[in-house]
Length: 124
Image 1 (cartoon, helix red, strand yellow):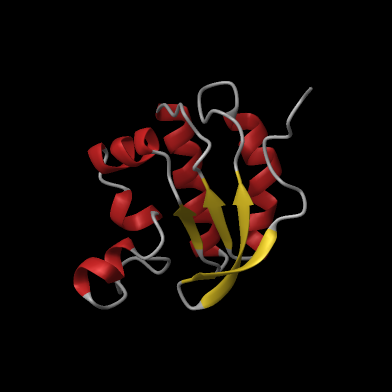
Image 2 (cartoon, helix red, strand yellow):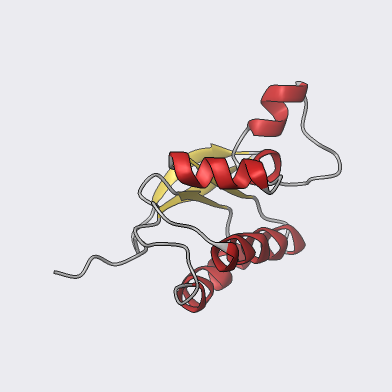
C-alpha cells in the first residue's frame, strides 16, 4: 500500500502568524531524492496560501530536505504568505536547532521566546 506523502485535502484553520493556514501532514522522509517531489507538490501552494507543515511523521531529514524547507519558506515570504512547521518529530526538531532554523520555521517559536513577532522574519 502506498501512502501519499502529502494530504491533498489539507486541514484548514491552524493559526499561523496573522492568518489562517492550511495544515499539511508530510508522510515521507525529507531527504535527497524526495526534494523534487516536495517542491513540485508544495511550491505552487506556498505561493497561493499560507501553509503549516505537520512534520510529526518525518523520521529522516538531511541537507536536501532542509534546503527544500528554506526554499518553501522564502517563496512564501516573497508571495506575502505565512509558512511554518508544526509538531516536528524529535529528530527534525534537533536538526533545525543545530542549523539555527528552529526560531524561523517552527510556528510560534520566535514570538514565544521574545513576546512579539520578529520584524526581520515576516513569517515568524
